Length: 226
Image (cartoon, rainbow, N blue to C red; front, side, top):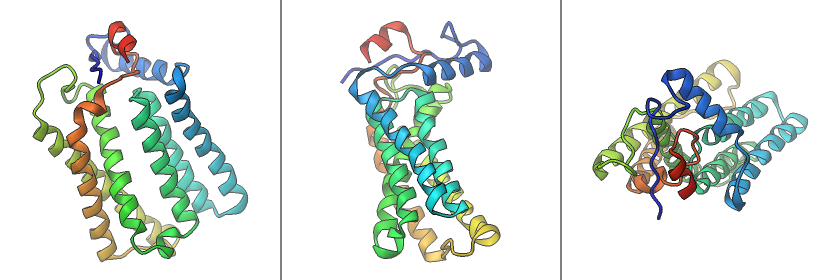
């Protein structure tokens, strides 16, 4: 497995301060895909756009909003330039979660909600972890000595925080927008537990998550290695 060095905003020639970092993110997002893996990841985003169109034609405004929120999640990895495999799997999990709501799979399959929260929450924690690395908030295990337990704790905390925000969003939706959105104490605790476990487990792949950077802020040598 190749390990890539990512330059912090202060180290990158294109990144001096917050403005430079924002420019690097935009340049990364606009960079043309290279290779089948990156094309596949971008293909998942295309499916996300098509899903919004389908939801707009055949379902409610709430369903369209769910896919619009999902599309926002799909483009974040493109800005971060994360490795294509994580990019694609995260995008697929987002679409599976959205379509599961649209097709009422959570009601049809009793355990499906738990499975989706376990997978999506864990992958969301992985993306948030890479975001923290790109922003220079935490050290990159590809270039620095980082204890595995530190990564595991961080991804668990990030995943639990994301899970809490999602459950709050469901409560707001149920209370103020559409009372058919299911909210239940037992369901909420179960979702948070499943998501927390997924986030904990993904932390053990911390070195893998940060490798193969496509981020413009990385050094030329590391981009070539990726």
